Image 1 (tube, rainbow, N blue to C red):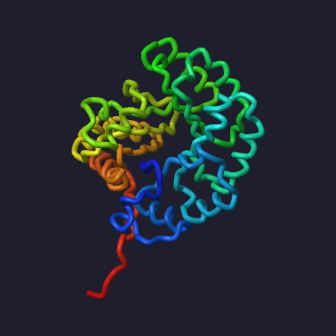
Image 2: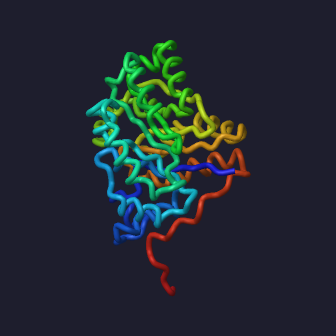
Image 3: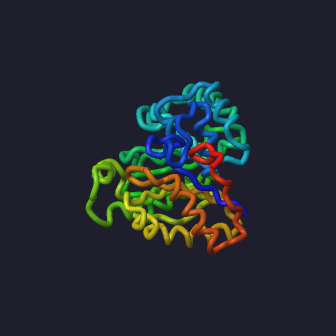
Length: 283
């Protein structure tokens, strides 16, 4: 029984020399991260389709059961809003092909302006995609959370292609006013939507955003520990991504979340031992 956990990136300046070795060549950073976590959000692909050689490097640095949830480029989801993007999709799929089984899901993150009235566009887009990949959709328009009919319509569209609805749980962030520059920035940019914890498929994906305070982040994810434990008992294969506004401790917190689930469900396979941040000494 395996639980996959990860962060929003595999390299982050505050981790260097603390969690991950420093200096570390760019082509070794993902390999080091993968000793801490067994999944990662592919946020870099949102800004541009990577070269095939870059993706080949990602594959070489990770085991076949490592999970990438690769975000579709913003040119597809935000600029062209899923229409007239066949060529862009072909280029993206060709680029990520070297990931093989590591491409756990392709992530369609939609802008907050993408409303229930746009569901026909989403359905047509999803039906054109090859079935060789899994798909996960993140919506941010409040109607999908506040209006039961809109939620049911979205679920119906996703069920038609076996896609998952990705919740981005920001409720802990918005419980209290921000106390740091990173939290103030997150308040301005992150979606303020209700928590959703319903899995549509056997491979649910969760994005959880806590606070810069570690204790508050851990306290806020306790409901997810219970939900993920139940999913595992049901035979599902969840992936959970842990964020904080500054992400300084996110790598350690992702492992802590995994430990919290294993405390309730000891049969979950442990994560690998992390690569030491500093080389061993003789004394």
